Length: 192
Image 1 (spheres, rainbow, N blue to C red):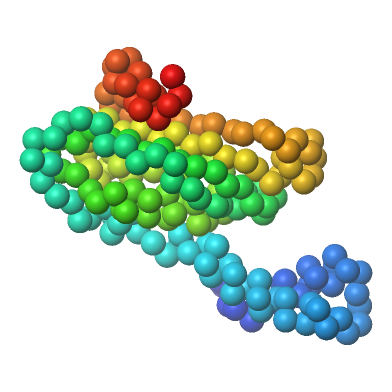
Image 2: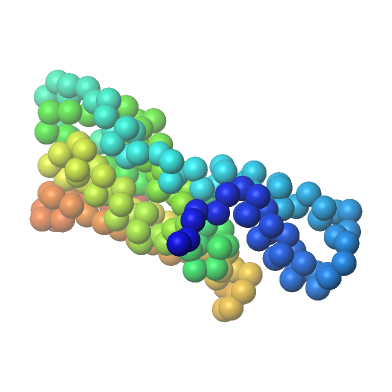
């Protein structure tokens, strides 16, 4: 029966990788003696999204007091790790929704991006999950997420394209069904 590895197992795995990378079978050199501990400590922060609940992030809402326009938080910077190569990717997210009767504090939108970015990920999943969470927990007329990101796996290996930017989007509700709502959103973001 398998078990979830503990911190000591994880540090040992990183040490094995360091030995593989540096082709070392004896003692580690001074500069990498504590690398495995530092890497695992950094993973606690980089992958903290697994320990955060979207429901908890979006559970504190306020009466919209009749506001029925677009709520948009633009240019939310994020850093994530590609699940395919474990290389970084980073960029900015734009999150929008149109409330029916409840709004959420803007910091919660940024926290939602962090929750999903701080996992082994792909950009498409981050985009979809954020929109799904907005729809599920805020029940808005519409939700939209647009993410632009630069991927380390494109820059430093394989094709080695330094300036490529990937854009993903998910539109739900009125943003999907009503071109005028989508057009207004894209204009607010500066994409049209």
